[in-house]
Image 1 (tube, rainbow over the protein chains, first blue to last red):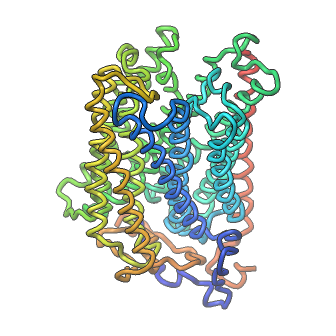
Image 2 (cartoon, rainbow over the protein chains, first blue to last red; image 1 turned 45 degrees about the vertical axis):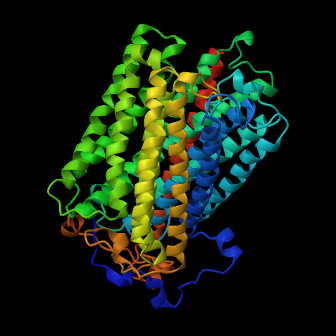
Image 3 (cartoon, rainbow over the protein chains, first blue to last red; image 1 turned 180 degrees about the vertical axis):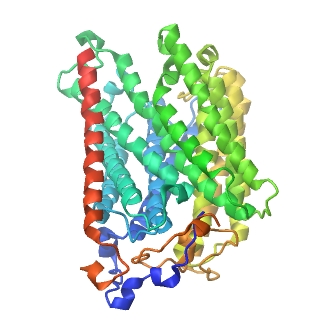
Length: 539
Length: 45
């Protein structure tokens, strides 16, 4: 979207004044760093680690479900796996990946020297490994880890054993980290943009993150409030959600989903931003409908606050409530449709090439749309009574989150790896990774639609015989998809260790300030802000 | 100091004040959502 004439003097101007600091070496560098690139790298490494841990849990689930009957794990442990898989993937893999990308890219994209609050940035990151160590340690406690599902509905979640307060503390820690990260991102975007980088000249990735950060600040405290109340109900004699004491367990669901639905958009809006960066590059055309993309993102964010009731149609609510939540949910299809239309229009008559980032971005558009359509089916209140708590729901949100959010993260990793490492990644291995992932993910999740429509409930370790074939196919897909991610790990390690040197702008059609600095990006960039002009902004 | 050494840099003081204002506003919003939802739930329970 944007470009600059500031050139190399913007890269490390400090060098000219003799106070360019080389980063310290060893462990201390990573513990004490306030550099946005270092912190971005740490977030991405944490995210990849948690992706494999959460993925291993998913494979335990799919291995157990490979055949009907109980084979490998105890039902209680199975329930712990479904709960922990969700918590680890949502809070440990997807969200930190986007925060890592934000750290690496937002300051460079807006021409800022670093994040607005670099010390807080360090703190935001270093809370996370401790939060997840705490969460994972609950698996080894008396009574095991949480097993009532990631939604933590009372009264079931209150039956968790010794692990309960540790789970609550770890969720609070993740929330504090997310809120601090969001404050940092908003403060950076609003206050540290280079001269001439007006809001409507910002790259789409920056826009989507700005809106996502506001969502985070509004809803993470709500989750924190909900789990605080769970804690006081269990240990301090309150009755927020205890019917016997005058409380209301359904109220927890309302509060949880007031957080939970915007959370879904927290995991998908930055993905929209990534795809909006990548498609114009490989279509060699400017993004179609830039302004409408910004307004669509803002509309989706607004609507995300008024649709939470669609997660709980079956708890019983007045007809007017069901109608409101149904129509409000369907309205989201309008701005989402604008986005899909714009991506396709950007590709239309473009001079397209299909490098790995573009393959993942195109797959995102197609497969995310499938997830969107099944979401529309679930939005229909009377139909939802049939789908509620079945594998159809599992298929729906996994289409949104895996070939949606995760594919966008993969696309981003391939797209910016040359900028981060200074080396080109192995394109052949990248394409192999893409095709194995794209085929595997569909074998994994598409049959789950049929299982759900046939009535198979979610979160169970055993099932009736008529579900056997589709479960077996789904589990085969899971192992194909899961082991394909080892290719990605290998590509990343190989690219970090060496490879063909990457130029400053490895992609012919790329635009933006991050491509004006050398590859790998120097430790300090844009200490002198670049000047962005109207003509450059729309090049 | 840095701005004085480098005429290309804008005066950091107004920017620092703006960052501080942004952070205070956002912290107030976050605390309000946390406390507000607990307060609302307490009214109903």
